[in-house]
Figure 1 (cartoon, helix red, strand yellow):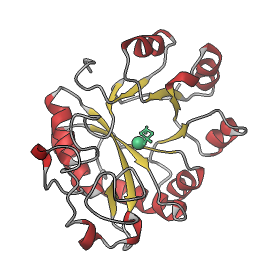
Figure 2: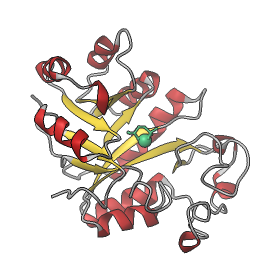
Figure 3: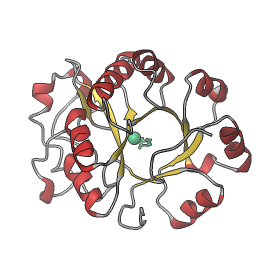
Figure 4: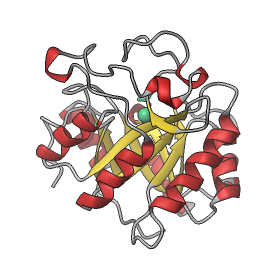
Length: 244
Ligand code: G3P
Ligand code: MG
């Protein structure tokens, strides 16, 4: 199996639901709870700046309107991405990918970058995110793990920066997932946790890949994944699990 430099425990979107997802405030809170690896969602502004946000639409997690990927970064940078969560975080900005990357590197933390393209710009997002990651992590021992539900995004990332590790995200075991993961030379399969069973873990490990799960918020589910011999757990519950 491939060597695996990452911790088992990964904080989803920074600190799950305890702070506004995908903001630096969330990452800081996750770190205060002892977490050393973080997952985030990255997409492109209209002018090609990679930034953190989960949804294509701005409404749920910012005071903006419309599709985030349709707006230039100087407009997105003025939005409030914290008030939707609570008053404590009012005014918290959307971070660029580079903001969060620099924070991780300065603190010796690991990052799982989920490439979350605005529909229609999958390949471009994969390429730009990979290029930024390669530049920012140049000369560092442990690169970020790039993952995506979109094979086109991972394909473009592979073409741009083949040395960066890739993980295929799966919400179902759709026809052809295995061949696609092999073609993309993935180092990991990142599954909806309920999909893992002994046979699938054996298949993935047998193919030299690691088995990761999202989004695991119950102790019984985490224990099942540990017992199955899987390698990584992404959770919102930075307050429940001990990442050590
Ligand atoms: O990357 C794991 C997980 O974040 C995938 O689902 O929708 O929470 O981004 P989602
Ligand atoms: Mg995600």
